[in-house]
Image 1 (cartoon, rainbow over the protein chains, first blue to last red):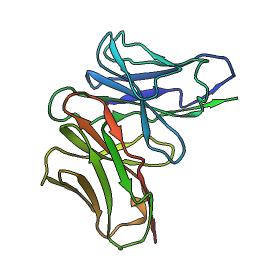
Image 2 (image 1 turned 90 degrees about the vertical axis):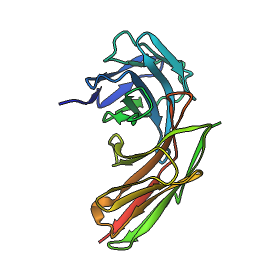
Image 3 (image 1 turned 180 degrees about the vertical axis):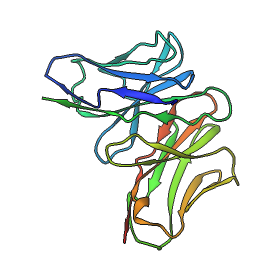
Image 4 (image 1 turned 45 degrees about the horizontal axis):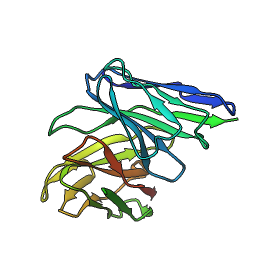
Length: 114
Length: 110
């Protein structure tokens, strides 16, 4: 089954800790994205990557870091510098090109600071 | 700056009562406009892509249309299982990032 997998589904972080959220896709997509969603709000872009070993900051990149060492994987690290990390995190991937560029999403990771 | 505004924020319908959701956008050269459905606690599920003004797409009770400034998602004779948040997003020609609106939360009462 082709798809995009996020893990874990729920994650708890203590103050001052870094945590890494996993995102894997087997759709052979070049582009991958990380979004943050807060209650009652739309999706805000954290980082995106169009190709291996390259990524760009989105609107709210401060306090986050990413890597893209493999086409299939785009992990997100929430660092201790992120002041309010409690949120629902969504990873997505899409094909490049002029058509069929819709993004497909994972089922999300809910991060809570305890 | 690319912007997406969805209205209304919330919509309550009776089963069978047709209505429309609006997505207004400004983008420097539209590559595509996307509609998604999101259930609580889940990732968004892709519904439609529209590429040019005048284009329409249909799927069951849903129909999406596009003009140069906005898109509508028409829901005909909705059922309770259509209750969800509907998200609109745009993608510009000059980059690959997708900009989302805040969504419309639809509730269909039996």
